[in-house]
Image (cartoon, rainbow, N blue to C red):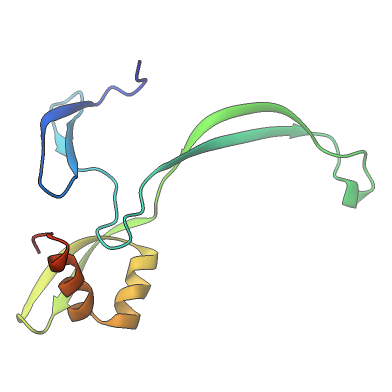
Length: 119
């Protein structure tokens, strides 16, 4: 059983992103970078006690493990696309922004269109 109060809509679009409805009935998209495909990943938060060995202690002991979710650093970014003389709004991670700086907007958008995304 899911702990989240969000429920998936019956329709996923052709790009694989799924719309969700929250308790207020608002629709929001999944947290996925359009270029690098980074998305939330699961892990643990550890609670420790004791003094570290490098501080002349006996060592750290793990006393608790809690499930958590690591969120990608996503930004909604308007990028100027000079070939079409218009702005393009993309949902990007900061690593994807560096990729755009390195390869150029035209190359990145060309790859997205080649993969079937509508930009």
